[in-house]
Image (cartoon, rainbow, N blue to C red):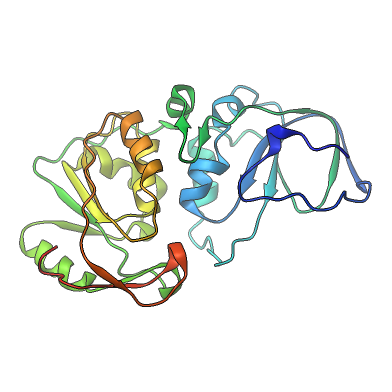
Length: 264
């Protein structure tokens, strides 16, 4: 019945004290954190205790499952792929939606706090992908053009991609790629750009990414975590700002229109 600070997360508030749990777990488990169908948030915040989870393969992991305001279906199984890639396949995973009474629970400190820090142990634990060979002068645009409208599209991106393709750029739709391939591109390419979003976070999965990062800002998306990640991976990171007009008001999921696609 007492709140423990180690479970705190900015997304969660304290409800009234729950009724005594009907379900019980006898033995020892380890707490993973929040789990959700959102690649960026799960990779950064959901897996923030990965540095410790990997040390106890014999223990089941307890996750608090949360549903997002905008549903993110996992149609290609990226979450399972990510769990297997990161060496958590040997664990039993228990996703909680109701209170559970646990006999003994290990509560690791988070190795990442949004806007604050990314611990070197967490960086090392996430870096699980190596290769492929670099492609000289390869430039990649991470496209949002095929995303559903509810995920924050940018009108005018088709024009940008056509111009970039004409200059030899490779256009990639990250939501159509495997998690491994999404990480590999940060070592393969020399330069990566695109409208800022979760497509940039798989850089953490590569042991030695090398690409220069040029994310194009979307109003309302904070830069802090992207800077923290770039510094942790020692990457050249320079955001690009261009004028754009909001087409609705939904914070991170707002749709925009580029004012001058050719200038970008």
